[in-house]
Length: 328
Image (tube, rainbow, N blue to C red; front, top):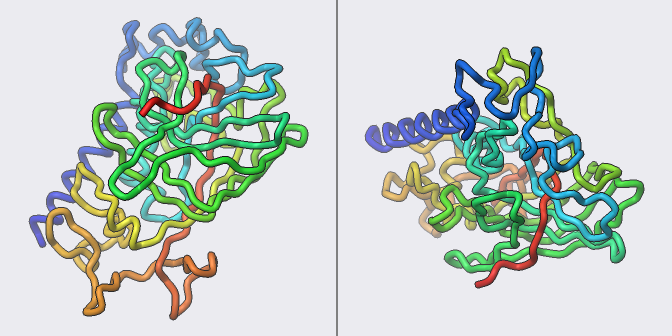
C-alpha cells in the first residue's frame, strides 16, 4: 500500500505541475515568464487583448465565433469551477479540468490544452438547448462537433432539454448526461456519468456570445490565471450526482485510480490496492464507501441509501461555432 500511495502522490504532483505550467507557458509569438505580453498584451499594468485572434469577435469573454443576432448559436464552457465534493474542488482533478477546458490560445493568455470541451447549443425559436461533450480540435476557431461514440459501457451523445431564454436568463434539466473528458486528443476520454443534471442561474449576454465574462488580469501574475485570479468570472451554475458504481468503472489513467477511490479521499482505507485501484466491496459485492447522496431519491444520503456523490460547479462560457454531430 505504501507503493500505491507513492504512485498516487507522484501522479498528483505531476498533474498539478503540468496544469500550473500551462498557465505560465510561452505562446507562439514569444511570450515567456520574462516577457509575458507576447502577442496578446498591451501596454500598462493590465493584460489587455490586442491580437486579432482575441479581438476578431467583440465580446466580454474571448468568443471565437460571433453569435450576435443568431437564433441558433453555440457556446463552449471556458471555465468550470467545481465546488462540491471538496475532494474534486482542488488538487489534481481540478487541475485536469482547468487545463483541459482552457483553450490553447496563448495569444489571448489562454494556455491550456483545450482538449476537454462541453458545448451548449441554444435554439431560441424552439426554446431548446442541446448540450454534451465535443471531440478535441486543433483550432478552436474552426468549430466543434458533438462527440457521438461509445466508451466502454458508456454511450456518449448530446442531450436536448427545455431551456427557453427570457431576456437571456435560462435554466434547464436533463435526466442523465455522459460527459467525455479528453486529456489527450489521441486517447479515449475519461467519462463523467452525470445524473439529474441541472443548469441554472445563468444569463446569456445580449450578443449571444457569453455566459460570465473574462477577468482582466495584471502583470503581477504574469498575465496567467491562478486560484485567486481566475481567467473568467463565472455566470452559471451546474448540479448533478454521480453513482459510486458507475464512477468505480472510470479509471484516471495517470494515477491508475478509479474515480470512486479518488472521491473517497482515502485510497488506503477504501481502495483494493490492485492496479487499477478500485473501491473495496463487502461480502455481498457492495461498495464499502458511503457517499453523501442517494440516487433513488436525488436527495442527501441517509443510513439506508448513500450510493452517490453530489456534484456542484460554477461555469463561464464563450461563443464558438458548433458544426453538429461528429462523424462516427
